[in-house]
Image (cartoon, rainbow, N blue to C red; front, side, top):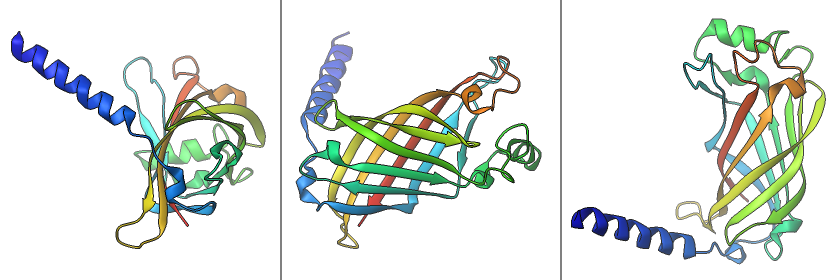
Length: 197
């Protein structure tokens, strides 16, 4: 019991020290940042028949940040995704997802997110509100963002930022509701990325 208490206390102290560390955005200049495609992931997750929680993602996307390092709420972020690049786990499932029942990539070759406002919620956390457009339908979405680091990259010397973002949406809002509720209408969206000048 004593050992458990000591581990719990150590974990609490570590957590406190981590959360107390604020990212200093003035360590990197304001301006345009683009995604490092080797260190970026756009994934989404849903529930299938209550049996599993598949996680799918996209291979081809851009993330562009226009950073205001003095007032991060004045920054903007844009994401552009090629839905043909979906990672589905099998060719059959990928063909179905890119077809008319779902993303219909022939008629709708891109998915976009454009921020409209940013709210600071903590030392390193933000709420980013914007429009997510899928199949020509724009729906307001809120992303909870955590900034992990801002620095000059130790290898390239370029200014870099690292962040994660999470949000939830209803796929039916975009005309993607087939098989609901057996396949959950609620979809969890997760982005983690490094962007550099």
